[in-house]
Image (cartoon, rainbow, N blue to C red; front, side):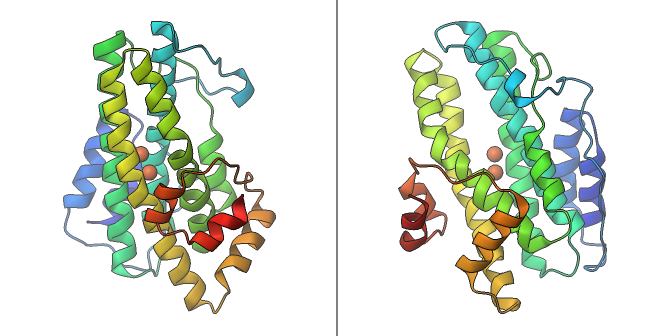
Length: 256
Ligand SMILES: [Fe+2]
Ligand SMILES: [Fe+2]
């Protein structure tokens, strides 16, 4: 895998081309110096979806096809952002061990797979495309808040945002299944299984960096969350998934 190629994928704005460039970056021979820093001001994204304030993203019931399509679109948008977040973790932070880059490159390829599955399902089941509904930009906001420090990024993106996905995905999956979209439910099963691995990667490197800097991990996490404005961890938690992803039982008890 090559970090300069990952940066090209990060800047790519066409979704399908970004998926292909991400896979190509993983397959490419490593050519880039480990100390290189590729700091994108903003990732490549298509002109649509239109980005609006989170409060302006309409929520519709799952009883209608339009409501289910809007939910599948919203999840596809999260996965599109997740490709960029994983590529940014590869590109922005220099001087990390080779395993760190391999881990986040693998995450990026899995996010590209999640996005592709959802975009294809949106078209096949609902006749809609990624970009047809408005979306919000909250995920990249967290990337901005943690752009200066890989420890802050590991604390707040995988351990807060992706871990939140573990908590909420089962109910979304069940809602889509209950309203007859079994294919979407199967895709969310794949996503949930993979996302446990992504949170585990975040935990691995968060704890690695805490140890390397001589920091107490729980204290460092609390301090980073407060300083960077992380959203609070809200129960109910998916305890089984979070334990599988490397959170300790003591840590989860502290969230509730
Ligand atoms: Fe994902
Ligand atoms: Fe993920």
